[in-house]
Image 1 (tube, helix red, strand yellow):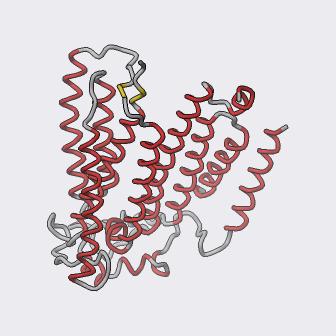
Image 2 (tube, chains in turn cyan, purple):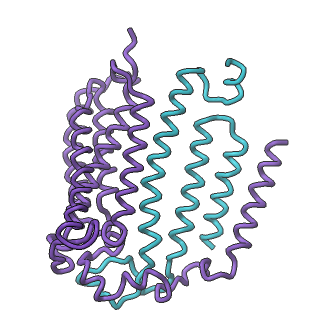
Image 3 (spheres, helix red, strand yellow):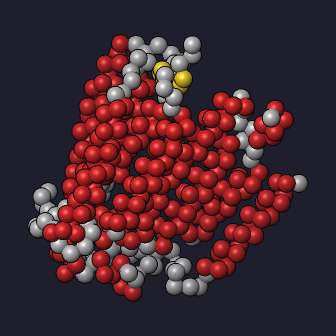
Length: 113
Length: 236
């Protein structure tokens, strides 16, 4: 069921991207989409077996135990870092837009230009 | 009107995604993931685990099996930090004014907290191959400690030049270690140090070294981004 919740979160982000005209809100919508996708990827590897554990081998967790799939977690780690980079870049562009037009609204920008 | 169109398009896309993924191997029922018939089963074979020597399998994948991926990822972060610096920096910069005057307690307390947060981040980076964590979260914590100093002291300005040098050195060392793998062993980023025993601090060959470099690089990059956002052009 969590997978459907993740897809719904993704759709929420897409809706926000369609309807918002504020640059900051658009960046936040992109982030909501990203979080939805990350939850979806993580949920693919989840194992609800009560004995399944995080994929870390230690003195108590031997290799024979049931592990959660580690590959989606590694990929999401990559995705989160790249998400931070793109968000920072987007916010930098938003700051420049505000400096030039004194507004974050795309509609008002067209009028003043 | 536009909102309704946007709503319809979004809902249609969501329904299509769910229909396309239903009843396939790639979309197992939640909680029934089985690693036996996936790529991940290779990572959990005893021979491979002993070969790579890292207790944390996620770290083994991120830095070991997919080290080249991680190099590209760090490059993406570097380029985005460069883009932020390119867009926001100008020759003469000064601190963005805080809306309040920080008092003495806040300034001293934040300096004490800074040390504790920094120690925590180094612990997380150093134990990336044994416990959850590693270079990326640890680097983010380093950057958060710098952000704390920025927010608690209105005169504080980090030495951004040394961050840039640290970032460059860490990135270059990452590539140099990869090339050493090419020279001393057979392929780029190959583990040329002994794997050691799983669970010990000095194990997993080059994985902890690379994760320390990644942590320093990510930390200095995000700290640079923080500095770029919290400074502005000097008003003449």
